[in-house]
Structures are given as structure tokens and as C-alpha cells.
Image (cartoon, rainbow, N blue to C red; front, top):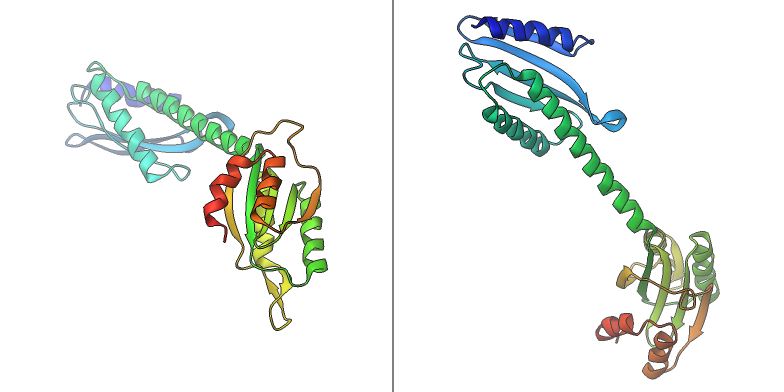
Length: 257
């Protein structure tokens, strides 16, 4: 066990002097030192990471064994960080390196946190994007009640759209994706209509024919929630053409009866 290792352990205990930050787990002439360092990485939204270094008797001539654990990171992420630390240790000169490795660990965790934050922000931005969806309803028997609910939900969720009544009953929606999903959830979980026997029922047969990000100019944006009857396929085609949704219509056309 070298004097350099003894000095390094002493220095580490002084650097990581906060409560629970440093622990000398084991020390022996045969096995060397085992130290545990609990560090916070990634700022306020960062992770607490426990890293255990096994400094063998011939350390630092050989790099330490390392294990990484964290309640805030997945097992795969911990394994990835551990491998990066081992690779980093193998690339360093044969001299005390634990402090460098901890700093490198913190850097990796910061990058991991930033990627996670960027991913969350990207999801939020996508949720705010303007989306369009076309739904297919199975039946509308209690028309006043059913249509009244659809109109009220569209207002509550700040969605615009069209209810097209004909051979196929279609609902066109525009708005935030999360609000469109909530509209669909309500359709399947709230009793909106009556079945053939007159009992109240949910719209379990509703299908989402298409759902996609949809960039609209102000003149193409739907206004309000409008109910429209059509009597033929050409009339239905004309509705989508008027809404500048011909491309969406062509994609759902094979699914229509």
C-alpha cells in the first residue's frame, strides 16, 4: 500500500467532507482501500450518485475497480457511466486519479441531466404543436345530447373542428395534441349516446383514423365546432378540400366504408 494512496484517501476525506459524502468502507494490506463517495451532479435537478472505488494494493499502477449506483438513474444508465469511468481510468497516467474520476462522473451526470431535460422540453413543445386528427364514430342516436357534448368538450379543451354526418360519422379536430387525446379519452369513458335498446352507452367503437402534426396558416385554421351533413362521397371529398386537408383525406379514404 503506497504512501501516495494513503495521502489520496486523506485528501478525498477532506474534499468530500459533507455529511454522508465520504466513507472508508474497508482498509487492509491484502485488499487495499475501498472508499465510497456520494456526490450530487447536474445542479438542482441533478442526481445523487454513489460510486465505490476499490484501490488495490498496487494502485495507482493499476486502475481501481469501480461500481456506480443511484436511485435516480436506471440500471442501464449506471452501467454506462461505470463503463465510461473505467475507460477514463484506463487512459489516465499511473498516479492518484480518484478525484479526477469523480469530477468526470459529475460531468457525465450533468450531460445526462441536460439530455433528459432537453428530451422533456422537446416532448412539451411537441404537445404544444398544432395537431389535426380525424375520428370515426360508430353511431349517433341521441343527436342533441351527443352533439351538445362534443361541442362543449371542444370549447373546454380549446379545440376547433367539424362533425361530419353521413354514411361515415367523422370528427375533424385541430388543437394541442394533449387536448385531442383528452377529447378521445372522454369519448371512450363517458356515456355519450344510447344503444339500440335505449340504454346510455360510451363510444367504445370510436377509431382514430389519423393523428398528425399539422402546420396551418391562419386562413386554413378551423373556427369553432361546426356540424355538417353530407350525402355522398364527392360531398365529403369537397369538405376536406375546402379545409385544405386533401392529403389527410387521401390517407384515410381507404379506411372509409
